[in-house]
Length: 120
Image 1 (cartoon, rainbow, N blue to C red):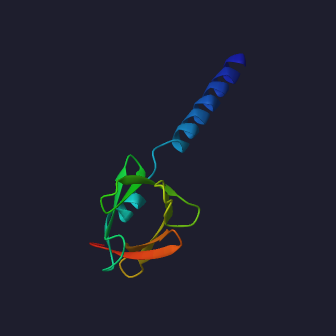
Image 2 (spheres, rainbow, N blue to C red; image 1 turned 120 degrees about the vertical axis):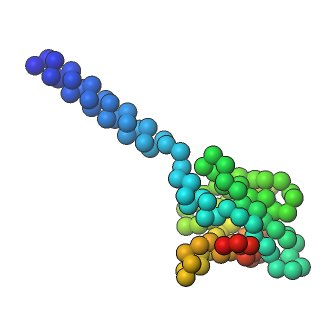
Image 3 (cartoon, rainbow, N blue to C red; image 1 turned 180 degrees about the horizontal axis):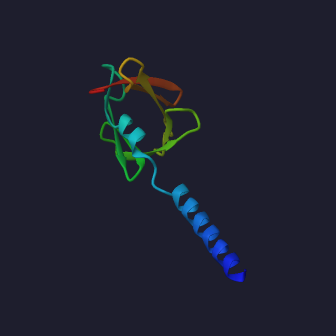
């Protein structure tokens, strides 16, 4: 009887360990890859290009050549906040026909700028 209880305890601990490891597994990069690419703003915009990359399960964004900053996922779908000093909010928009990311809107310092993805 004692042996059976010890086995059941060991199996329970093993299952708990597997469940905890599954919850701490790396983020799914499939959705992140949909955001990756270059986005071009309209002529005359203060920013010409915004480049999105994915590294180790995290998104990064770079406006023109101002340096890369981490994009932190927000509660709202397809929305990220830049860790840059501006704290820009980036919202990605999907094309319903192609089911691909087609553009982004950047809210920065009270202004919204929209950019189209170069190769959606």
